[in-house]
Image (cartoon, rainbow, N blue to C red; front, top):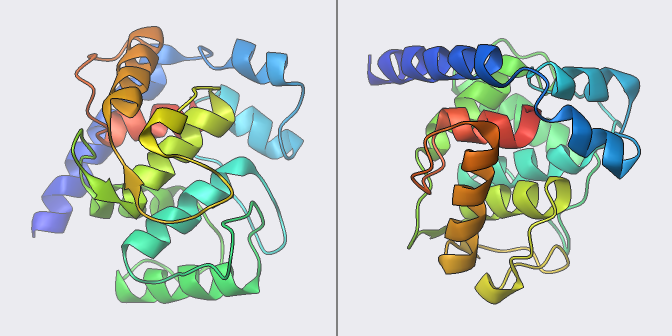
Length: 195
């Protein structure tokens, strides 16, 4: 019952976000040059969750891997890379099975929504793999420097949500037209990945 209420809240927030920011992320994508595929780039520009199947790659696959790690379904060998490889796919399908999602083997919108919901709000003072997911999006998609908080894409682990991450989240929220409270809720998470 609690999951249903949180899911409805997350969907309402995400729906409002899609209508609210539209193509706000398009200039950033254009400036970076290209996304992992035309499908993913189009999804990002329209505010939809990106979708990945076996073997596809993109920076946001690393975000999903950290979210799966947060829930105990995935652990990297040495790095958290950008490929939806067999190990990550098996972890995703186990997660889909255990959360009563349709087991598709696709990192789809429903899987993203459940992963973000299960991560809960991510805020200053937290130390978790969900923080690493947020930091990956802030650094790799949006160009924020989070070295002050110890973030490095080369050394996976629990991220620390310190002042640099808080400032980056607040700045991002202001640019995206969200409430700039420095807390990563479902709407902010979707904007980070899909906006």
